[in-house]
Image (cartoon, rainbow over all chains, first blue to last red; front, side, top):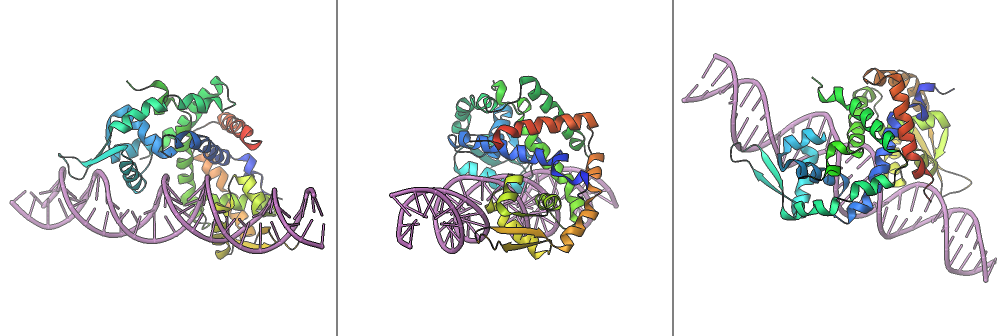
Length: 145
Length: 145
DNA sequence: TACAATTCAATTGTACACAATTTAATTTAG
DNA sequence: CTAAATTAAATTGTGTACAATTGAATTGTA
């Protein structure tokens, strides 16, 4: 009766959607010790990697816009994890960078990836393959007109 | 300087998170014609497949709780896509089922999976493998104590 | 049978996500 | 040089997510 292609089990998007939320659910108790959410943890990660970024650059990296980032960065500023300031060269640009507290958090976070990995029943090879497939899936979107 | 495991590109969770949002972004203009969001489309799909479900059963299938489903189902009720009623046998249970409009939507939706597929640069085999990996990732969580 | 424990939805409060609009600053064209 | 076009964030409004709590119905058990 039901059209085959519309069955939940025949879709890729649904397990993608479900797996994402299940994984962030596993991060939650671990990140709680750091006092951040998963998206906030991503912000910390790009900043640990890049030093400082404009809101626009951060948005390009995380696929998020200012409507999401602005309020999130304000919350992180209140928690003293990041500083936000207007660029001197271009007053439109807001530059985000880590505070001392935000930098120190990297040491605490160091053990997080392996903790998450330990909770996953994929082999190392499967993990690599999954990452490759997901990144391939993202590719054409990155260069979208 | 940065700890290797904390780089965005070395993580599985980030492409998972980014890919999910990019995919739902592709669904948006297509689903707009149906007048539903992606999570609402998932609700329609489980109902097309199962006929009717309690909020609890639907939550188990979609990995969502009543805090998410109740307001969403109320919106879908306003749009005349579903009916909600208390079960006669157990007054705690709310049974959700499709209206005529909700059932008819399946015909319109029939062409959606292939439209989405056409926008993806994964091969059929890669698609199957991706689904397998994601489902394997979800497995241990389903049976979580 | 009573009544404590459990179960199911709903509610409350916080935090994303994102389309669309607004505001201010900068660039570009004329 | 200046008005129009563009750009970067912020804002507004809607819709998920989800932890935690609440309230009503049902179950289990003494």
